[in-house]
Image (cartoon, rainbow, N blue to C red):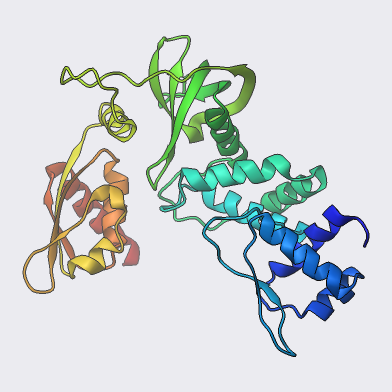
Length: 327
């Protein structure tokens, strides 16, 4: 292999396999001399790849963890596997799979050759995901389009369906994607309404990046008179609080706090110990009664809802229905 850039990429691909490669085996694989392999290893080190060499008759080379993340070289199968995995996770707003994973997916799909994009789409279409049922399914392509536009500061056009079913056309300047663990939301400045809006991503269809660039606007200022822009997370929380009545949760669990905390979404807060082998959760939630009841039941231990009254009534009715169903 006489093409030096192509040889370096092939060498890097081999070194990214988690094993130690003898110099002779690398030279045989690339059809070059051991001296050429040593020079290529030095070139990779100059480019920032931490290649470690071991001495001795069975010594060799391997890629180790460095101080920074160097570019990865993926073969076709690896690229498809990563894209499919990111799509599956991003499409269901799984807790812990947040905006960073969507940005990674957007970057990967941007550089995938058309033949690989077709394979990823075919696999996604032919696969049925078993979801938890407490969050809306989202087209990963929609997420990557929104993420790319927000990162690239590019205006978006899309159709949006409100909670009442009304369809409208929107043109926005996207600001942030937010994952609550249950749903994805887009924070954006609506150009037609000349105000900030929060959109549920599962209600967005036909998103299109217009190519028109924009300078990001500051968020509305704090109401304390400081003149400082509002924090994005706090602005989003307040925006959502105005859309749905807030539930003031008061729930006692018959299990230790660490057990319950590991089974509750972070958005519900952390329970505090309340006697031996028990804990209590006092927090607020803007989610629906149905979702709150489901999440409490999924903790998989005894619990008692102290409030609010509407949640107490809903859990009581739900329990009666489940009892009849099992009868």
